[in-house]
Length: 338
Image 1 (tube, rainbow, N blue to C red):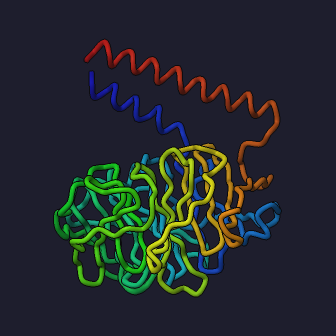
Image 2 (spheres, rainbow, N blue to C red):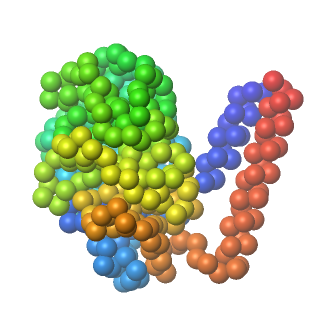
């Protein structure tokens, strides 16, 4: 009975979208898994033009029906790597070749982590995934090219030597993993893992005064294709957006997204941070002019996104109400059973 209820609760939560958003090497935006469709959206100057959005239909497209999807840019190869984006193929990685707009699917083996718990990043220089699940650090070598020519094998690197749980946040910059929201960290601090030496730095690093919190990190990709030296830390409440510079050991504070959807997906180049909400609404922050920047919404009729019409508002409210009723019903059943 408990298993059945848990499964039903998972289905209810998956009514919400699990879309992803990525930039390619030329700062073209890709919106993936929106109402079972993928889009190439062009550069920022084109985002509000319906002509710029084109659908991607080639190859083994993932369903984007999981609870913890994770997509990253492989910058040297101009492609997108996506983990945990298809419930029926959990142990597969999906690769989107930005040059020919085609999906490929590859199986993974070895010491497979729990992908629903995995917090993972793709290292810029080595093209290797590093991730943490159940307090263990894992790695997956993708090879030098976009499409792997060897078996993709996960390896357990070692146990993480400091206190973390499933709420840890991992930022990537300067070929280091930066762990936020771990046990024993003060405001603005992070634990570090040095990728090229496979070494956990014993000293904590101070970057500013941001609160330790659940949330997410978003790596800032450079147009020059050099390794990232900055990443965003976005607390779960999205009250602020923190831009961390690991070369200068500083943090700039920007306003948080106007849409406070904690289930949003984000991507960033060195000028623009983009938010895709779980309702498939797009917003962006042009931070090239400094921390006075404001969030703006992308409104494009080519995307199946909610607009501001009363009819669609009522439809959205109805869907939300139905989900809430379902959650209340399941919660009551759980109380009775447990």
